[in-house]
Amino acid sequence: MKLRLSVIGTGYLGVTHAACMSSLGFEVVGVDNDESKIAKLKSGTLPFYEPGLEIFLRDQLATGRLTFSTQYSALSEADVHFLCVGTPQMESSLAADMRFVESAIKELANFVKAGALIVGKSTVPVGTAQKLQTLLASSACEAEIAWNPEFLREGFAIEDTLRPTRLVVGVTSDRAEQILREVYAQLLEIGTPWIRADLPTSELVKVAANSFLATKISFINAMAEVCEAAGGDVTVLANAIGYDPRIGHKFLQAGIGFGGGCLPKDIRAFMARAHELGANQALEFLREIDAINLRARQRVIDVVRNFLGEELKGRHISILGAAFKPESDDVRDSPALDIAAQLHAAGAVVKVHDPKAIANAQARFPNLEFSNAVADCLLESDCVLHLTEWREYRELDPGELLKLVRNPLIIDGRNCLDSKLWQEAGWKLHALGRTNP
Ligand code: UGA
Image (cartoon, rainbow, N blue to C red):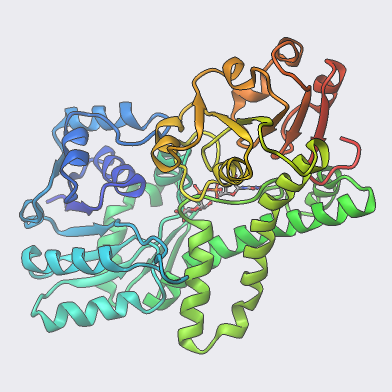
């Protein structure tokens, strides 16, 4: 008989995983204690924006294989449980907040059947899986723990789940590996690399991957700082070093740095965990990666002050982009909104536009002004900041926009605009890390 699956936690990761597993032919129940989220999902409405996922979700609901519930009792028949709850940063420290993982495991223990496999997908401090296995044993629950980290990117969630770069499974038995091979059989058939690891290594793979990506971004942003000081151009530098296949072109886009619900909190939680393990020196460099990243936001504000003067009170600043990256409505630790809030705090009149993230941005920063149209956002502007590289911003007509603003000055915080096009239309364009863009 085909395995029955459950997914606990219905955020980006959980909903995507549940819908994708259903598309592979499994019966899947998604469980979350957030009633409004579950009500939306049941009716085929996605509680967040992810390209293509809402239609995909509806298709899967229509097959009857995918269901959602607020009750843990709904997952009692499942053979494999995927743990997809969030592990955000604690408010009081750099460490990850493990409350959701712990409460999910306690609830699960009441309902899982003997022999079930609990597969963690959440990003957790190394050692968590072993701790959870001990916890389950002490509550006389005969389920086994495995860890199967997730590498999906927001904006590419379905693609990354059904055609992943690799599958990493942390297991303590051949049986657990066999069950996971059965779940992912179709992905193995298309040649997805399969890596069996022990529990701690599988947990570490995820934070190591995100730390490497964060390091790549901060590396190029550090080069941007040096290029600015030396009169160079970081985009040319990135292109040139990227041709070395050992370096590669990806994740070398200099600008205002990384944000979101993963990279920033993952490197901090990794440092906190290494400290507990007595390996803090090994990850000292991540402190610098974090500092370079936050400095990129400050550098934009310095550039604005260089152009408009120290006093920003009453100056009109238009911000293009609120999401932490394009093709997402996620504003968690968004560099764009951080910059917007700092300029607002300095007395500037800040207006923010975003194609998808305005509702989320407004909920987090109710004091900022938002526009639904780029033209409205730019009206009477003294300075435009391009902070999230949505495609529609690259397709803007700089000549048309010139008529709206008070001062034709644009700062490209993502190095994505066609500088010649803007300059020829009469704009002064400044780009991070480029002396003569
Ligand atoms: C990241 C990882 O890329 C995924 O592999 C991982 O599964 C996920 O975190 C997670 O832990 O769940 P995501 O947060 O969706 O995915 O976003 P990324 O595409 O990695 O971008 C992160 C940030 O880096 C964005 O703010 C983006 O604008 C910035 N970035 C990215 C740059 O500033 N420069 C670049 O060259 C690339």
